[in-house]
Length: 537
Image 1 (spheres, rainbow, N blue to C red):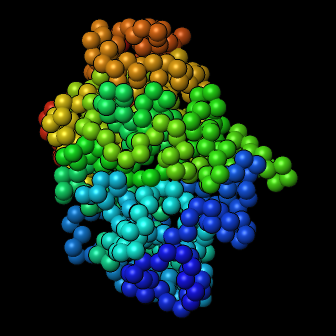
Image 2 (image 1 turned 90 degrees about the vertical axis):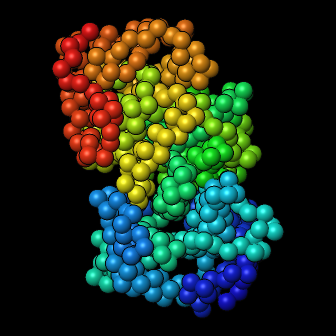
Image 3 (image 1 turned 120 degrees about the horizontal axis):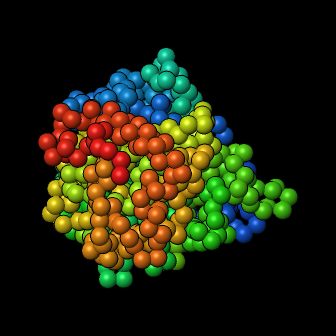
């Protein structure tokens, strides 16, 4: 076995990886790009990014993710949301991974999940692909040279896309597997080349470890204004979380995963993972610029192999094309990954039903209701198998797939922190106006940015408000620089009766979805539910 690079004193033999080929430890970005190109894992684009394909897996394999049902964690896991694997099946899987690794070249990265040194997670990521090693180096936080020499991982992720699980032997649903053992402190990923599985595994681990420490893990972006006030942006894929937090007038702390502790907010990551499809140099200039930087990893972006030109508008490989890059590639990004206590929370939703106002003020009870609901809507073209009608998506805590614990643990912790720090909460609709998807149009990003600015600088707090007749939250009547008509969704519909029907339909969806939480929340949160009986304005 040949070792190349800066190895840790805590070797791979501790997890049973032996008789390996060459082991590349903590290679820098340029070396990893070179290895990836030489191994024909990807192509170098004209302006420097590494372009790769992930094959059939262009997103997460939710049905193939498992948590090992171990005695110490059994009663803490939300099993309604997490598929279980027996310890015996995991042991068999681990042995198969060890066998698969023998004789193979592998890449190792020793990294931290979490910018706060009090709460960070030392994690080792072992991969068979050079570009996966580059990806995770971008997405997590690199130790200093001194920290690396004595690096002792709390968790290890082994990522072998070429490995195929055996359902009969390993208890899996298919040849693809993502299995998390909290007792063995191991994550095994096989049968998928989608690199996002690695970063989300780190998020899952932190989502389990942090709440008992009264630290809130969040699927969100964070930025900071010139007066050092910070803002949290919750939102599922396609809601604009990454785009809206990359504001040239504010400092970006991070775009996807954060913790909220007694000292403030901290990024879990050291990079960004942004959607690339139809990226606009006008609307998203900071993110667009990363497509012309050396070392950016572009997943499933179409490239002309002759000219090496990119086509960000071509979705033939995937609607979910992605770019991974260090957060330092964003010009106004934080160098520390840390921020103070938040002043505002933005819950972003892409309402394809065209019902929700572009911005609404939430009470603490309403905030918990909408946090637990985690509503957005998917439309045809964003995901395989969707028809013409918008499909409601309720992903509790805006990140259900990564929540090992029951949602109310996160909801109650969030509510406590909101009250403690007197945080203003807003629901922002980045979806449709003037009608549902197919009739209306997407909310103009200029309108969303103007409303966000007014909320963040405090002017919306003093604006005249109306009460939405269905959802009960406060909605501004007028905001400088914004057409007042767009603030009232009913007024943007040509057919007002059709709007009323659509609003009642969406209200019922919310109420039906929330039934599973009613036994776990107080009367005030249940009272925050939207109402069916209210007449339209």
